[in-house]
Image (tube, rainbow, N blue to C red; front, top):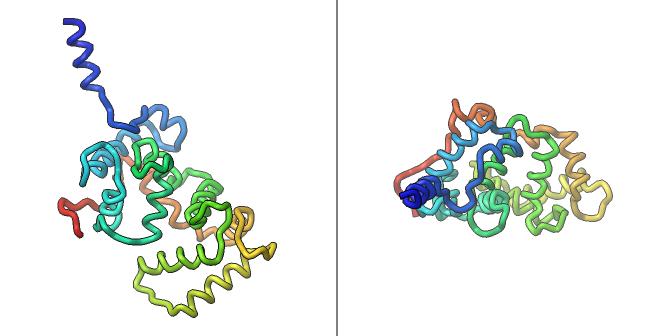
Length: 214
């Protein structure tokens, strides 16, 4: 009988792969335990929208953010890549919380800056090269109604490189990036999501549809 009770208890408290104790996550992020529990409810919705396995797959991530599970966009790919810290093709709960914490209002500016630098460093070389900058500019423009000619985009890239690449080695290193952010703090504007300060009151407004748009 005792063995049965223990077995039932273990089954009831079983968590999906990648689950981490809210108290541990609270000690490593700006979120409180209650806020992390609220985020877990959100995570469960996202991770079961297409594949019910307790993990957020890329299709589920795209569906939540863009209403389209098959969307092709470099910016979306990069954001998913940054959230997928283990580089195993899925986002686990711990990765979800730690990555979201970067966008918390209380997260230090240098952490936000570093995250954004890595977002643009497409090849993980520790530098942002002109072709990487151009690809990201094009990806961001594709998310707006603004259309620019090839010449205009090239001009933006050239001007940015000329201003930011202070040692003139043809690429932007993280120190040069930090100087750019220090002079233009508005660059990090989208790196802060105010509602993360009150997660339990203002649940993140991710979009979830019952049907997948292909």
